[in-house]
Image 1 (cartoon, one colour):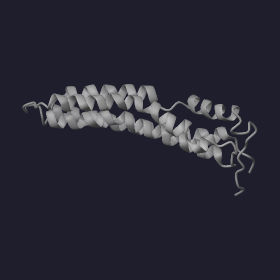
Image 2 (cartoon, helix red, strand yellow):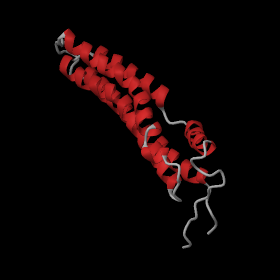
Image 3 (cartoon, helix red, strand yellow):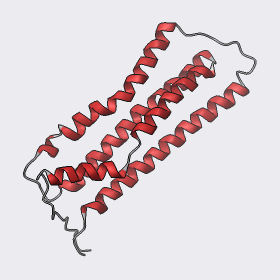
Image 4 (tube, one colour):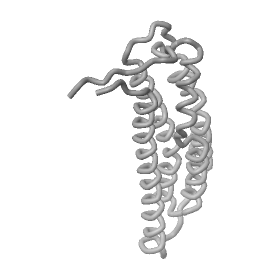
Amino acid sequence: MTTGDYHKILKQKYQQAFQIGLYMLFSIFLLWLAAFFVDQTVFAESERGELPVIFRIIILCVSLLGLFCPRVLKMIILEHNPMVQTSEVARAIIPKLAGILFSYSITVLAFCEAPAVYGFFFFFLTRQMTDFYILLGITAVGFAMNFPKYGYWEAWVEKHIRHGKIPANFRIKTPNP
């Protein structure tokens, strides 16, 4: 088998992250569907409850802070990772860099998905869809801002190639079957 290009490995990891992101979006849709169904059937005649205002404020603040976590995670996982800072590059560094990008993307999407889950539980505590919709909106903004984009992944790896951390003609040898 011939030598493989790092784009192939990067693209494979990106496609996995993208697919998991789609599954996460689908799970959010299922949460909404379940909440809507329960609101229309089970809770249709039920009395609505209230949570303490301070509890709502805390959850909203945590949810909004979750939108800023990707910047912190980017600094920790992508920029200050010892593997990324290495000047001597091992032959297997590209798959590891792709793995780091994959982990970063899934972690960020989990932070983005959390407000919808909080809203789902709020809905069952208060029987009010408003709480769920507000936190679902925060989730939508988070996903829109942070859904994996291959161009960003490629630019990140290219930046490390340009800065001499990875040789420009780097190729990964794949074993013969």
